Image (cartoon, rainbow, N blue to C red):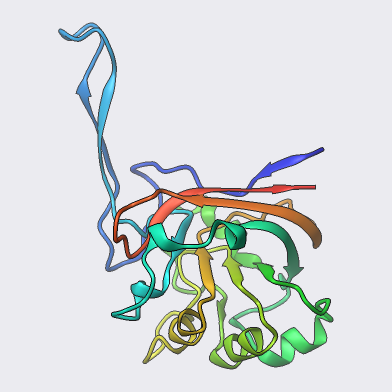
Length: 209
């Protein structure tokens, strides 16, 4: 059994979405400075790094992060390689990818995974087009993962991709790192922090081959 960690480490130098809070990690208690233990204070947005979007992120009455179904967050997943694409994943791209029927979890590997080496946020990442979101919903997909900080193409006038997926109950996982992961089928485990009534949460995501 091979386990791949596809999460992004949280640090004060990591990129964050432009409108989100920056990451601050500072010592609160320190050994050698009057304390017997080390404790740090964290300040960050709940959509930092590898994180999970529940429906309430864009839908006022949607499910919150602590209400997500663990059966959807864990199970067989398909990694689809779209590293050749420059701007966005469309429904036509999905049709050509020949994704097996009844695939419930899809992770998109794009050129985004190499963008994590840059400390600043990049606006030229590959997003998922609205027609692709409709395609995913129509085929019963329950979880979609992308390898940068948003599934929405940067500069979109409306968050149609988010709303299309979340209104259908599809869980969105953003901020994955699929560099070095080959296309294929794996067991996916993604566990967000259990934040009461949360509109999102960072978490740890792994693939098991």
